[in-house]
Length: 68
Figure 1 (cartoon, rainbow, N blue to C red):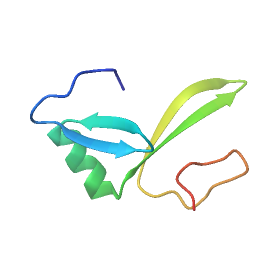
Figure 2 (cartoon, rainbow, N blue to C red; figure 1 turned 90 degrees about the vertical axis):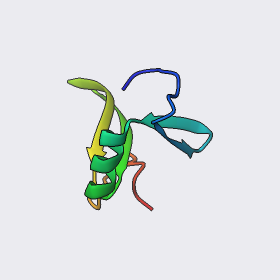
Figure 3 (spheres, one colour; figure 1 turned 45 degrees about the horizontal axis):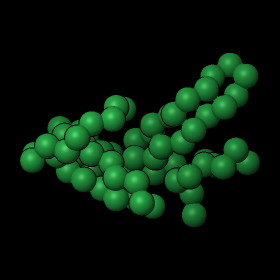
């Protein structure tokens, strides 16, 4: 992940007021895998953003943003 300006060939997704840009190759991978979930993890041994391909059905009490 990085902050960047949109290019003509980028796909733009607006989710909750935040715009995400993806190049064509990344867009294809995300679509083929069934989506993308971005979570922030703050645990004693790891901190930062975690990206998961596909729809996750095994959410726990940590607050998985990909669950209904």
